[in-house]
Length: 148
Image 1 (cartoon, rainbow, N blue to C red):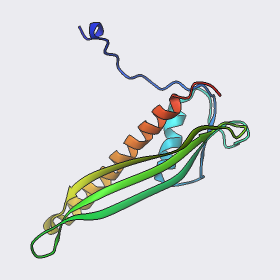
Image 2 (image 1 turned 60 degrees about the horizontal axis):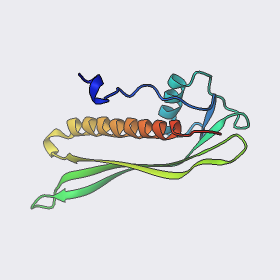
Image 3 (image 1 turned 90 degrees about the vertical axis):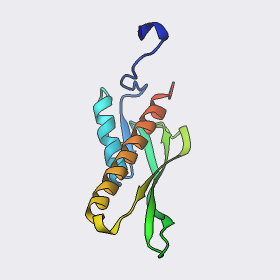
């Protein structure tokens, strides 16, 4: 029945290039996760030589924790966690394939002084979830490149 409605599971991304370099090296956590994601999806090996590969420049990776709610006594009750990533993709000869693009994610998290350790663990999990979502979005955008 699902096949009749046109529904199709999203498969692995297909790329028109065989090698990619993610800069800066080593970069932050987002750059490392991008490298491992490309290693899983590209049929060829990644290369560190930007002269022979498509280059994904991770121009900015920023994490923020902003207070968005306070209680009657002025105590923090809610935070907003944010990740902002700016990237671009260039061909081996320097042509811009994807202009600088910004992707942002945010999650709200309540705060309770009696559960500080649990809230810190929840914060780590939320940051990791946002980071994975950004990596998936970048992979889909890079897969949309039609021709070099």
